[in-house]
Length: 112
Length: 114
Image (tube, rainbow over all chains, first blue to last red; front, top):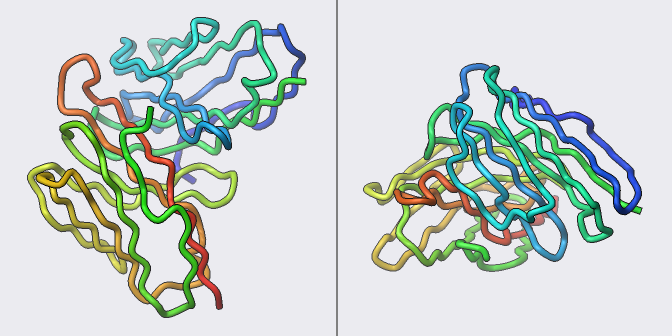
């Protein structure tokens, strides 16, 4: 158990819908990362927060947004969902930037 | 785009043999990390090597880093069937707008036969 909790574990939704994925980092970790993993694109970096502020951004679509709250948990919002958004979404946390990251078990999103 | 490129894409060996995986990257880094992923599950951190280090050990794992060649290798000695997994390298950026961005390669699928 990495100490990073992601909910829900599985999500099935229809195209055009909006979903929210939640991540609770390890106790004491200030940095949260979001990744999307699909068979064709591999593990894609989406966005990183550090102590509530956005620190780095990857190839995150405009339809996606994220935030980190004062209690350090983070949410990833995916809207106007398309079939191609079906993937595993991972959250990871680390104490500081550029230290080892601990991954949650992921949320498997299926868009039908 | 991926920062790290692992080689080979797949590796099949017998228990007891050593497994070597390589990673090449393109830009300057603060650190390079190796992770393991069992099928469909979360990634597990194995080892982190900083840009000013050349070699690091952890149990049966040995990682080398050559910043002049922008490459790293992961050696797993005396492999076990339980080592069967995908292995990823990830690079941490040193500064600027991408400071802390952790970018993963496509991974090497390791299969260890009993």
